[in-house]
Length: 173
Length: 435
Image (cartoon, rainbow over all chains, first blue to last red; front, top):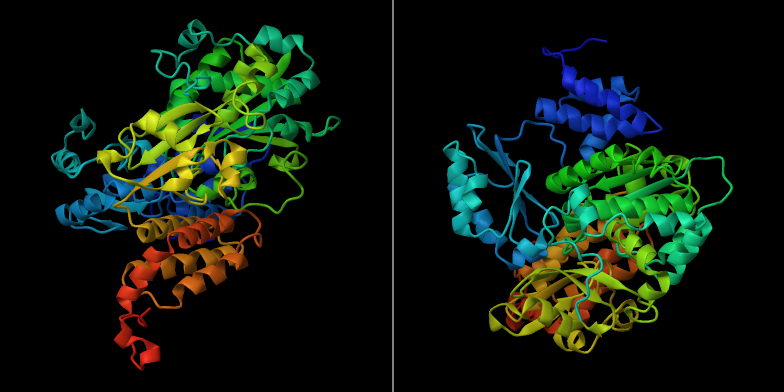
């Protein structure tokens, strides 16, 4: 079969070790698909057809079954997210406590709407449903970290820190 | 009123470590546990009256007893930590602050049911809880509590932390199993029930994090002691996630049988900013809404809330104040279910979409006079007509919001349809027809 991909994906030695450690934990190879996709996404940043084919091949699954899984789950990316990926919760408690003001700030300040990425690749933004942090609403997930009890001012400071290459986690405290 | 069993150790420093947990009285249940026969443990849990804390409230011991005793197949435990019902944020605290209680509970369940492998399915967004729980599992392996000779008793118990990838439906037990098997998390028709044929076509127990975490206390203190707390049928305590328009939102543990509003008020300090209470959603966004009056006159236990026409669910209480628009609240709730429908059953896939679209247009000032009747007519075509209850989770709130706060919907629709523009007056409201 011909392939048009220019870069070849494979796990780094460290991830290969993690992949091997996954196999005995599950009675079927198919059950390793999601953990293996996580490893691949963590390594590559997002999942290209080539990466998905690689995971399928390693686990002896049909490529289409892996594509279907990737398509179903919201946390798998098929295009590269921004350096700072914003997931703003907009379910009930967050809505009652002002997530729409936060969305307006993001849209005005960095100029992108849900599902978009800034041309310089610094920010990408999506609105998401309940992240299980309703007691500290409104909140967002920025890359792998929760930012809770947000206000417009606090979010503004966090976005500033991101833009200036500072650690956004330090803004909170 | 507030009584701590599950959250007893939440505020103790270092409790997430094995050493800290032990010094706080953890891992004390094994002498009693292993002195009992596995069947006696199941009986013990039955007598405690413990019910599932994930939402359905099914008696835990009974669920375990459905697992066939004589089977060649391996058996599995799936711990449901996919916490996704809007308003729920309590399992996260157990994973972060008391992870070893969950591990101890897993050992209790595995010993009772004869299970060698437990999968803990944690939602993918919970990076920090996953890290804390994974560290605790590693410690437990090192200490010999898990592994090939778990607790030195010659039994095998493995715990695998499995990270989800973002899908509410994987909190439904058969959706979780499908997802664990590496597929789309689309629920399976029942029967067969997971107890008979679950993960990897083997007998499987699926229990919520909080349910499992209650087990060590029940073994330590006795089934009868646990059963004496709460009411006759709603025994023990539960973690309630209280959010929305209250002064101090958070997770509060309470004994069943107390007055719902008194409990909320005592824990959180009441409605934020001294506003008036409008409504309470008692058991996650899929539960029927209660008016302020109902919330004041209802007790917080499975039976009383059911008698009030709603449910305890996952214990996710959301408080709406006088300024909260019910139309907007329903719109947001329905957007969630429309987004999360897995798409395999048409009544759910299409029903959640249309409920949301119609309430959305009402909220946008484009509602049609017939919209309330239309919404009511869609609900019975969804409820009970699908593989899982996600369709009901959208239909139940829709009906209750409309029934109890009809005037707010009518006002929004009337505003969009002034008399001179109504069809019966010979007029046409082009805007209202736009959708």
